[in-house]
Image 1 (tube, rainbow, N blue to C red):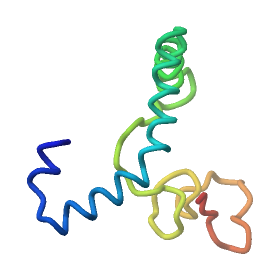
Image 2: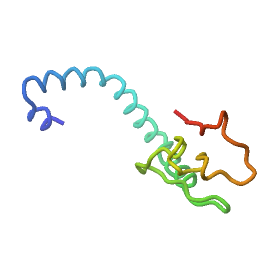
Image 3: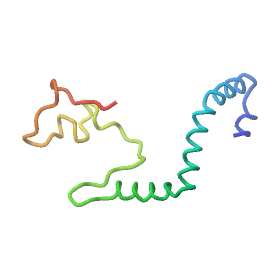
Image 4: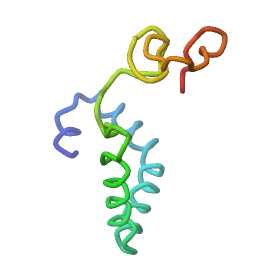
Length: 103
């Protein structure tokens, strides 16, 4: 991080310092939580549970994890389970004729 800071112009350094100061305490809370999870063993348990959650289950497809994909719930893309084009036969139409968006 120091190399990035040193490579900035004076104006860039001022902007970096402002952003760093604004994010320091929120980031510190997250890091502290991570260190506490590692210390008590929850971090390992969390990884194991995530592995189970994102592995294939009988009758269900594997859930993609950590992939940059378009939101399949947005109307008009023609992808995903909530798109009007991919509804299961016999399922009710979307509310007010539009696909729901989850944001």
